[in-house]
Image (tube, helix red, strand yellow):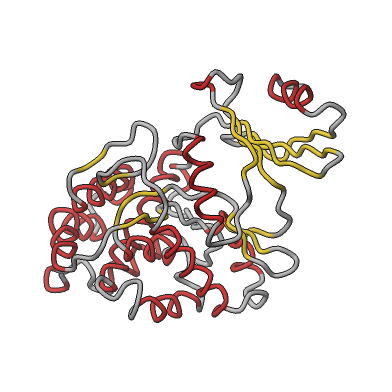
Length: 312
């Protein structure tokens, strides 16, 4: 029994404790007399857990969320960094979209995702600057500095795999000025944005409800950033075009043209994850549930002419 398991046994005497997953953070099922609890031993959280709980509460006003009952933080004197949440039965949305696309009507999915984007706009921030609301994350004086910084950071990890190719030339040019120029040409309002919009962070319950399973990493940015972060995961689902139609007259009335730019940035972010963890698997890296590779997706976006100077 691990030390954290012993801690759980002390906290919940007589409970049936079993490990559910053990990647970066170890997750346990704790079955008590009053019902099951999910206990996560957090070992690599970039988000202060007290802030995570505050955001969870704020989001729950607008959408069904996996409720957080309690957090422990070592910086407050607790023995562990841990999150205790309700158990939500269901299938993660990435699996549903990939394997059972007819189970959830695309119109319902899009309506929920629009509500999610709008709810995140009102989430509390950790500071008043631009940047990610994470521990030790840099803050920036302007929006352009913020979003181009991370796009360059992601591309810096991915570029070695494209050295000497037309892809490298296109993305280099985009980052040398095209992305920033497009941002300046299409200003929009700022608010909370779900940067980490992986569909695995949502659950479809047996009774057909969509529930936010993990509070996203949030930053201060534009509506197109939020839609692009989600759209990157829906590019091969009918909901993608429906989402763009749904936001063009409302959420993204001012910056719809920036959505594909942020899809590129989101794809580079996912690819940078694999560049660090599975470099040997390139070019077969694949987004969760996608029928095509990330390389295919990136090349497809470049082929639209998005990065050409006249497209800015």
